[in-house]
Image 1 (cartoon, rainbow, N blue to C red):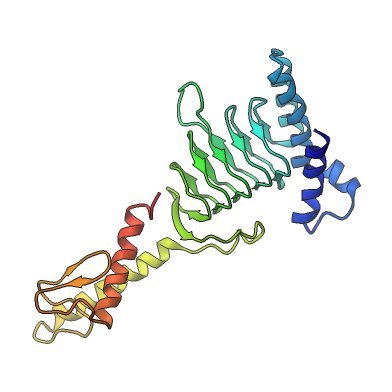
Image 2: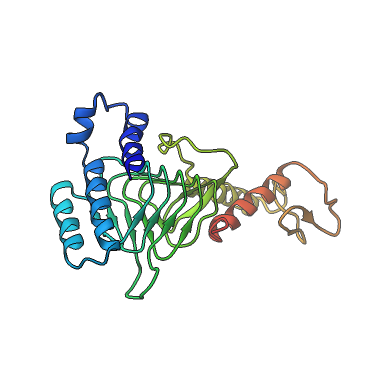
Length: 259
């Protein structure tokens, strides 16, 4: 328990440049205060003591604005930054060294019993206002963009943005927990591809006798990797190949990019 409390304290200095001394951290960081109260209430909850753990959780919510059910399991080194409006459900499990911003909800989706809240792996970053709902498994080193709504499992080492949440980046490298502000805009990328397609079609309609460069000849069929046509080599390059890549990007977006 002492090692866990020390990790909760030290991680604030590592991840918050505004933390200047231990007095500020102890008395002015509601995320730390909520965690300290939760660890005590969780210990009482595990002993089967009625009422008192829930009442302690309610007191912690009143003073910090952070609601953590005493049944939730939280690893060491977890940092709830600012924390106002954070809600963590009864069966939620949070791995070591996760970073959670204000307005995050780790909640359920109904009145089902048993495990009904998310499980977060280690080093997960959940951006401000994000909602992770249901009995989901969020892999290690995942970044969830601000305002996202995650409704399905997310593999490790991914970045998730949007409503509903979509995987927009996969990598094997450990993420920088403070770099959550630089996330790709998958919606803008797909809209740009669709606008390019519309412009090409408009150019072809305006002059049907001349096929604009980069349009798709009749009979061409796009697959996941190559352009297959009776009279077009599969290894062709150029604008048609770019269309193939763009079609795949649009398809991945509509299919949830793997989630």
